[in-house]
Structure formats: C-alpha cells, structure tokens
Amino acid sequence: MTIVSTAKYYNKKFNSTVINDLWPELWFFTSVAAGVCCINKYTEVNFTLSTTLLTVLGTVLGLVVSFRTTTAYDRYWEGRRLWGNIALASRNLGMVIWIHVPIKRKVKEGESVDDAQIRAIIERKSMMNLVQAFSVSVKHFLRSEPGIYYEDLYPLLSFLPHGVDGSHKGRETEASTSKDSEDAPASLPMWQESQFSTARAAKARKKRVFDPEKVLPNVKSAVPLAPARNPPKETIYDIFPPAIIFLPIHLMIKKLTGTRRGDEDGSRTIFGKKKELEPIESNIPLEISLFLSSYMAVLMRDGLLTPAIATGYNNALVSMQDVVTNLQRIRTTPIPFAYQFHLRISVWLYLLFLPLMIYPSFKWVTIPCTTFATFLYLGFLEIGQEIENPFQYDENDLDLDHFCLQIQRELAEITAHPAPDPASFIFSHTNQPLAPSDRRSALEILTDKKNGDDDDHTTLLHVRQTLIKNYQQISEATFDHKRY
Image (cartoon, rainbow, N blue to C red; front, side):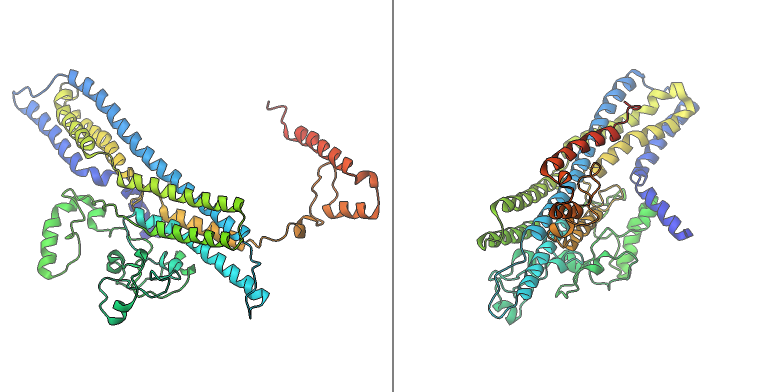
C-alpha cells in the first residue's frame, strides 16, 4: 500500500466520522468554557449555577437524544431491509422469466425451430435486463438523480420504445425545434431529457480500475451519459473543515476571475456542511414495471405462462412496487423540523450552561469536560441526522451501488443456468440418492431392476425400508450426545 493510498484510506475513515460536522460547535462551547474559567479565576465574580439543573436536564436530554438516534437508525435499518426485498423480488422474477417461460414457440413462416428458440432466448434476456434496470433506477431515484441517461441505466433501457405509438422515434427533449422532432410523436416520460445527466456528463469518461459498466451493452445515446455515481465534488473544505471561513473570499476570487466553479451554487451551509439534495419524483421504476407487467400479459395471452406461475410473476412485481413505495416514504418524510430544532436548541442551552454548573467542582478541567460533553451530545444528533436518509453518498450511507451490482451478478447467474431436463443429470453414476443405507448409484439401481438382478434389493418395499434406515442412521450420526 503506497503513501497516497494509505492517506486516502485514513481520510475516508475520518470523513465517515461526524468530526467534520462538529468542529464549529466544539470550538464555540470550548471557548465558552474557557471564558467561564477565566472569569471565575481572574475576577471576583462568582459566575456559576446550581448543579440541580445539571442533573435534571442531563437525564431528560440523554433520553431524548437516545430516542432521536434510535429513530434514525430504525429508518437506516428499514432501508437496508427493503433493499434486501428488492434483491429477493428481482431474483424470484428473474427465475420465473428464465426458467418458466418456455423457449419452444410457434414457428413463424420462413423461420426454423432454432431461430424461434433463439428469438425466445433474446426476448427473455431482454426482460432480465429490465429487471436489472429496476433496481438501478430506484438507486438514482433515491439519490435525487432524475432521468435515465446514466452509464449503468441507459444501456439496459435503450431498446424500449420512445414514442407513444410504440416506435423508436419521439421528442426526447423540450428544446428540440427541428422539423423532424416536431413531426415525431410525443415521447414517453422516461425519455424526457434529464438536465442533471447533461450537466454532469460533459467530460470524457476516464479509465477506471473497477469499471462494472464495461460489461453492459455498448449503445450510443443522443444525450451525454452521466457516470453511474455522482457524489458531490470533494474540496479542501472536506479535508480541512475550518477552511470554510475563507469560502466567501474564495467565491469572490472565482467570480472576479470568471471561474464559475466551486461552492457558488449554494451547495454548503454557513458552517461548511453539504446541503442535502431535495427529493424528486421519478416515474422510471413505475414505467419499467409497466413493461414487465405487459410482458406477463402477452405470455398469458399466448398461453406460455400457467396461471399459477403468473401469480408468482405478479407477486414479485407487486413486492417490487411495495418496496419502492416504502423507500419513497423514507426518502421524502424526514424527522419534523420542529422536533429537530427544539432538540438542538435544548442541547445547545444545556451545553451553554454546563460550564457554569461544573466549574466549582472541576475548575480548569471544566474546559475538556465541556468539549467532551459537546462531542457526546451533538455527535449523536449529527449521526441521527446523517443516517435518517441513508441513500446518499456519505460514507455511513447504504452502499446502493453494491446492492445493484449484487443483483446484476445474481441475474447473470440465473441466465447462465441452462435449465436442463432433470432426467439428464439425475440418473448418473455420481448420484447416490439412497445413501447411506444403499450406496448404489441411481443408474445402477435402475440397471439392476431392469436386468432382474438382486430383485429383493430393488423392490419398492425395499426402497421405503431403505429410507427408514437412512433416517435412523442420519439421526444417530448427526446428534452429538456429548454436547446435549
């Protein structure tokens, strides 16, 4: 590990703490404590308060802060559980499409049997790409990234119809004024150009060591594609937070020199904290579900899907829609501002009066004690505020990219399964289905029965007796009498 990589690793770990967000409060309340100590030490003023208030408020605030942190962590954990449900529903839907949708189709005129089967495989694989695209679209939706023009999403949806008439021509942008664009039918909502994607995709794509998008379809787009990940740009204020005091001067210099980049877009608060993006409305997961649902309708119409399997197909779709609704609830319903404001003001007042109450007992040690109390109380508040929306790019947020890549790997594994006839692999020399009582292979059992050899050992009654012996031997071998 090089020095640069080591420095990046520790900087990443440091940014995962809340120290970057606490430094203004730490400096302020430490300064207050130092001022209280100096007043009491070098003047005749008795600048102290009774410790009775300390005991009462400390207990109450401790319970309230604990409740605030627990509530935020519940939202964090619920988000993780819901993403697990997306993975499960995607896996189930993928297995239904790949295993239960037959490839034996009615051969069209002028088409061979092999051509019909290849067409069915291409059809199923295209639907599997839509299943993969669903989780990716949910990821961008939760991160307030509208549109489909991303390197990990557009290649999976590029084959879908653009216009309302089912064609691949449509007015994709409102800015298009050409005659061809005006004559084209109105495009579906998902094909409306995303300003976010266009704004962030101007630079050429850099080569990366880890590049999962290279395995996706290589298709061209009329709109520049944004990267799969669009985290806020890291600046000097992330590495050294106190430098935020120079931000106004920095912005003034940039405006005078004509460099319109930095934090002039108001992406930070006065304390240097990154502002959270506002939630957006996205219809892309819904539209993907509509295409998957219409595919089920076509399969039912053509008699390619039995009602029982169609129920499983529909249940997976309903589960995916339910998960998106719950994720949207978490994303768009923050803790009420009045609650957060009242709690933070209460903690600030407590920390403000804390040095006055503990100085008679701790003297100069009041300063580090106040610093520690500030770090403790405000640290829990900042943690709760950070994880109540666990879908962004912070180090403590859920790794949505990892979840999507995991779903991609699982779907690829499903499509790699040939789904052969069980008879082609069950009756082989390597399968001993009646072990441990009968160590013969499945093929040997059938061969002995067919040849009439050892008929006493190949009767149906013997098979049932063998299964009973298996139960007895397995129970005896797997139960540890010394442990229980």
